[in-house]
Length: 450
Image 1 (tube, one colour):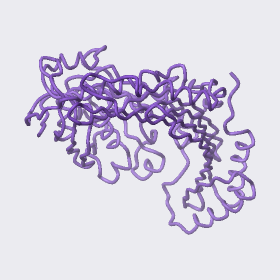
Image 2 (tube, rainbow, N blue to C red; image 1 turned 30 degrees about the horizontal axis):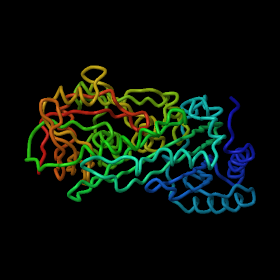
Image 3 (cartoon, one colour; image 1 turned 120 degrees about the horizontal axis):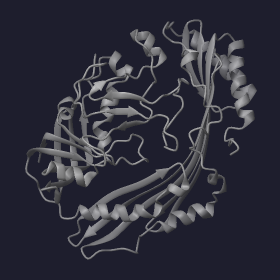
Image 4 (tube, one colour; image 1 turned 90 degrees about the vertical axis):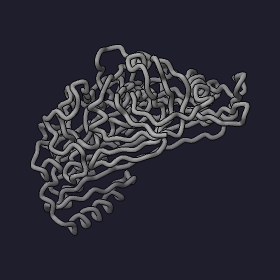
C-alpha cells in the first residue's frame, strides 16, 4: 500500500524547516511535532439525523532548548513567514525563563528508528478514502432501533447515538536526527438508550464499539446491546451493607487499574503523590497480577512505535507476578530524579489472565459464588498518595454464580493495595476498543455500604 499523506509532503518539509529556523535563531536543540486530524460525525436522535459535524485540526508544537532554558510552544500557522515571527517570540520568552539543567532531548540511541511511513502497525484503513457523507448517514441510520423494539414491561423512550470516523497523523523530528511518523484511522459508534417501565421509572445505558478498520466495526450490535443492558437494570432492589466478593465488569475495570499506572509515573513519584513510592523491583501486589505494555500490537488502536519524545516503545512488563518492573520516566524526570529513563507513560497496558486462561465474566461469577457485580461507577474519589478510595457503584447482586437482581446507590470503599492483595481472578475478555486492555476482575473481602 502506498503510504497515505494526511500531512502533506510540504507540511512535513515545513516542519523540518521550522527546526532549522529555530537553530539559526539561537536554540541549541529543538524538537518539533506536527499533528493533523480530520473527523466526521453523524449524530442521531430517536432514529433521525440530529447533527452532522466535520472538523479539521492542524498544529505544530515546538520544544526549544535555549541557553540551558526550556520552552514549549504551539501554533497552527504552517507558513514560513508566520513561523519566523512565532519562533522569535518563543525564543525570546524561553530566554526569560530560569535555567533548568535537566531539560534535554532523549539519547538518540533510545529513539525510534522504524516508524518511517507511519503505517507499520497496520492501523490505517484505506477504505477511509472512499467514505462519503451519504455512506456515513446510512451507517448511522441503519444502526438505530428506535421505534423498532419495545418490551412487555418497558418502552424505549430515547435513543441518542453518534457515528464518527477520523484519521490523524503525527510527524515528530528533532535536531539530533530523529524522524518518525504515525498515522491511524478510527471508526466508532456509541449509543445511549433510555427505557421507561410501567411505573414511569427510567433506566439508561450506553454501549459503543471502535476499531481502526471499518470492516471490524460491529455497529449493528450496539443498540441491541445497550437495550439489553438497560433491561437488566429493571426492578432494582435495596441491598444491605456487606463484606463480600466484588467482580468488576471489563467495561469499567480500568477504574482500579488506572490509579496503579498513574502512581508509577515519575511526576507522581517525584512529588510524593503516589502510593507506590520506592516500589521498583519490589513485590507489592499478589503473584496473580501481571500487567504488560503491549505497545507494538499491530492492528490494535492505541499501539505506538514511539512516545511524545520519540523514544522507541517496546513490549515490556510493568508489573510481573506482583513485582513492579517499570516506572514511567521521561528524559526530564530521569535527570531530576537521578534514575534511568523509560517511556513517558503506559502505551498499551494489558492485564494478563489469572488463575487460568479463557475466563470470562460468567466463569468468574461462578468462581466467586456470591457477591456484587459492578457494572458502573457513579462518582466518588481516590487519594493518589494513600491509595484510599470511595466510589458509588451500580450493578448486580449474585449468588451461586448467578445474577439475582440489580442494585443501585451503594458505595465501595477501601485502599488499592488492600484491594489488590485480595485478587481472585483476572479474565481474558478485555475488548480491543478499550484504551487499556483490562478484563473482568474479581476480588474477595470488599466492603460495600448501602
